[in-house]
Length: 196
Ligand code: MN
View 1: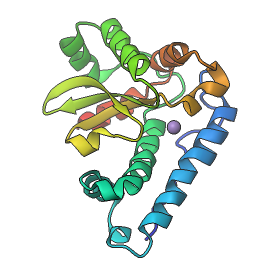
View 2 (view 1 turned 180 degrees about the vertical axis):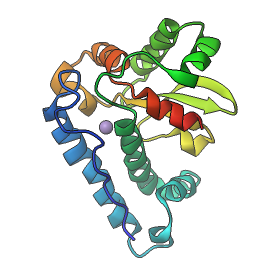
View 3 (view 1 turned 90 degrees about the vertical axis):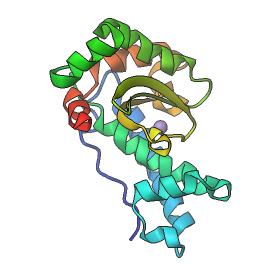
């Protein structure tokens, strides 16, 4: 029961010019696929081979000897979640999440600034997140493969800030990538669905 690479939920050119088809070719077709392939090699023939991806993450997060499995499993999960959190013409939040963002951060503009800052201040590789921590909306960042689901938080949206996510389109300009994604590509229907 191997872990599968899910289909992208949009065409490769759907997010251009914010994220180009060229970036998605490498990011989805090479990076994400490699995490899936590496994970399957690492768990083949072990007890983890029969577990769900979420269970593999939670089990390996507690075991330093399984760091390689954790890194690949969490990266598979994080990337699948990132693609789902993106769509063409995302725009401003709608529905229940719009009210929750205003209540938690004061305004959409303050939320957007804080999310951008989380991504900008993640030193090196990692992820910026909007999560539910209990019933509290929080903006967080994680390093490398780390993921909120290893910390009992419920992810609502994420932005990949590894260089491979933006370097072909923005080179070193991580803030420009973050701003463009936040303003144009967030799938608020997906965020609302995650609120439950
Ligand atoms: Mn990535």
